[in-house]
Length: 201
Ligand code: C5P
Image (cartoon, rainbow, N blue to C red):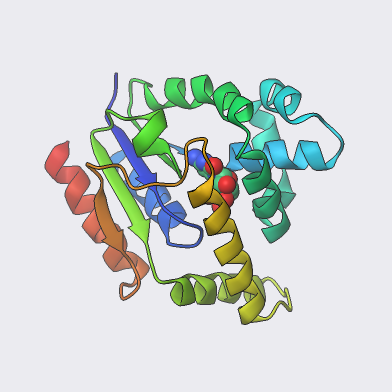
């Protein structure tokens, strides 16, 4: 079993960027587990039944270009409340985490449910306002005319659904290190995460 890094946290806290950079820096494979739920959400929007969609998911489904949109995130958080969908996606995530070369997985329940024995657990967070501002900057750069207040409202609704659900809610594992990126640049946040990984490797 390889070295495993579990990175959880709410939307737009920086966990995706931190995960990619840590994976690059330490030569680990990376799985953005949000993509699994986004892909299932997309199949459901096209008429599939949620459990059947989760069971039929293939790695190619994770490459679909629309999966990064706000709408896909919303759809993902709706299918993510279904325990059978989560159960159907568990084995793939666990076997990814166990690969010999080591892996970084990011999501909401990696440290708590998917990889409770991970070598490093991080819970990455930031204030609502800062997360909404970052997400709004990304969307504006892509030409999306959405108002920042609307982005904030969407983030809050999605966080509330992710934290309140019964099945594997978003939670910081007891043994996770909290990384608050509100006042940090992305480079500074990556450096703190990398220090922690180096210490445990
Ligand atoms: O991280 P991302 O924004 O891509 O995740 C989209 C949605 O998928 C989240 O809001 C959450 O509802 C769900 N998700 C989850 N468990 C994970 C990863 C994502 O429930 N491990």
